[in-house]
Length: 212
Image (cartoon, rainbow, N blue to C red; front, top):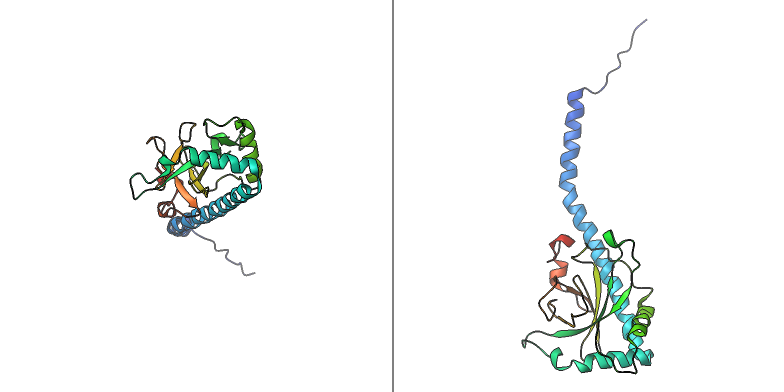
């Protein structure tokens, strides 16, 4: 009776195949990472648009919010002029922390920037009011990293137009954001406008680690 010979892969052949697969994976990984991060940024831009449009509509439809926005932007009107002339400053209305990474145990919330308000406006209620308009759109950032890009920052100009930034390092003493994403006190990390305009430097970021 003729015996059949069972042939298989040798150890050398297996090592060669594994090496080839590792090389291919290494070549494909950067492109895949770029694609994933591009998709994450696109998703955040879409969320920023929804946030901005919700608040812009609230300005037209809610008297209390309109009064707050008018007050916040008119009180600091002189500071919202160009400084220097080629720049533009925006009034920070508030910010929202992102419940990811080390913040996962906390619920996302909206924080109103600390400022003197007329007696007709109640600060604690305003934060709740603003959050109610952005509740459905206030989602965790996808293109983010703790302490670098982990906050939504909501701003307005002196004409009561809404602007959405992403960044980090917000605190109650940070009243203004410049067009290039630097706060008025020169503290904190870089922030980037992503609605209604997208900061080109944000688009140029390969990963959240590249943010300053």
